[in-house]
Length: 143
Image (cartoon, rainbow, N blue to C red; front, side, top):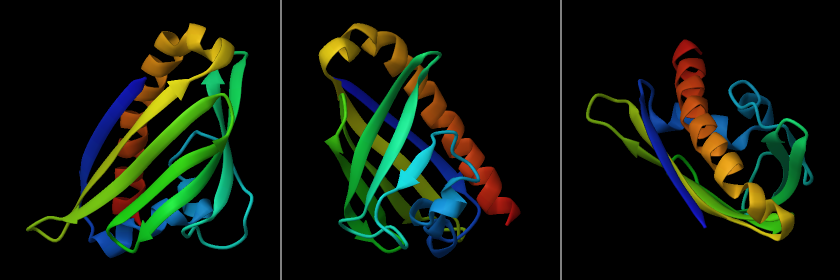
């Protein structure tokens, strides 16, 4: 099992940050993980999407379902299909200065042949997760 955690402090209130987690158009402004929404509308509990990631020719498509949405506070997800079992969540906490401390944490279990590349792919996913949080910070603060 692979565990990850990253966080960033964004100079905007949680209400300004949260839509970047639940609006697929805004999500595309900072994420390099291609996402295809299965259910229409803003992401809510029960919404489904597919994400594709990997390194080079190794690509995995994972079906994700949103398991919790607490506006301006939390969004969580879990897999419903794919070779990697993924559970994750975003937590938003207001800072004293009117900003937001945003953390992203989760676990991944690689199955089948994907277990063989878990160390390589897992390390890349951890690096990209931290970079993605920094890109999110930049996008939200420039908006």
